Image 1 (cartoon, rainbow, N blue to C red):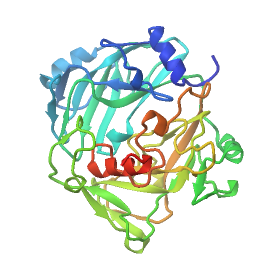
Image 2 (image 1 turned 90 degrees about the horizontal axis):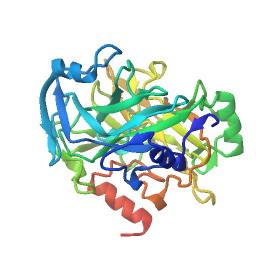
Image 3 (image 1 turned 60 degrees about the vertical axis):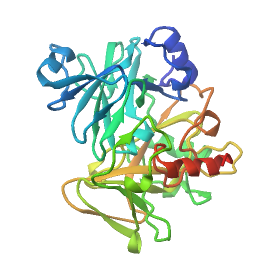
Image 4 (image 1 turned 135 degrees about the vertical axis):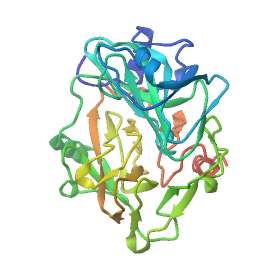
Length: 378
């Protein structure tokens, strides 16, 4: 096996080979082009604080000290804002010695400001599952802006399986872009000399003044957000539109914003990508919670479309922070696939955000209306 991200067909084979096991069995629709959606199990623990296990104390032992309550979520349960919860996942893994795992929130999870990360036994790192690991997986869930309702079987997080060193160097990114453009400004690909690289490709924010909102800010004291109800929630009850006068806006500390990239991103089937969540050199900002970009995101093999915007999930730290139109605030890393997936991100597999503009998560009615218009179904 050469280095790279395992595509959908290899993930299905991994499930058949017992690398990933679950009861009930993994649904076919949970296999994505370059990742596997992970399901919430039957119970949850409200915690006093977050934690990481080590190689001497089990997660169960830690829970004995840190769990405030244990409760059943099979019929649904409410998670309070800013309270850490730990939920055992349905899936467990038995990875071979040359395959490691990496996890990230799904796009719909990040866009509602739900912070999630996976922990595993004997592991001192979040979201990284070491090669050869065999055991259960647990999901830490903290909803920052809204009280949420979850239930067994919901998928908030996803797992990538990786073999070897898949990361593309900056020189490789330039060569890939020249062969098949990765970013466009409008309908034209950026010239290679315009790319800004430093262990990844920087993207800028779109705050061009216009009639449409430049972004959204989460409203305080919003209603309960039921994550099992797709396309049913009133967006106005949860989101305040942001207009960027003069091509700039000031982000308030610890408020949650949805902004959008100026560039259009195009991920060809032979690549995967991941947004860096936090880069202190670009400002005291967290600019992405759900970092995985699947092969095929924004990609049109017939060349009729020129990529899709990246929605940025932004939270300023410590002090008010001004961002201006075309300011570079986030970074995209690229990785090779072992082979192109037999299905790619897009409308054919029901992907929610292909060719997106500034799109709220799939839980809101406004998002559903846009998607219906886009696909010609409404």
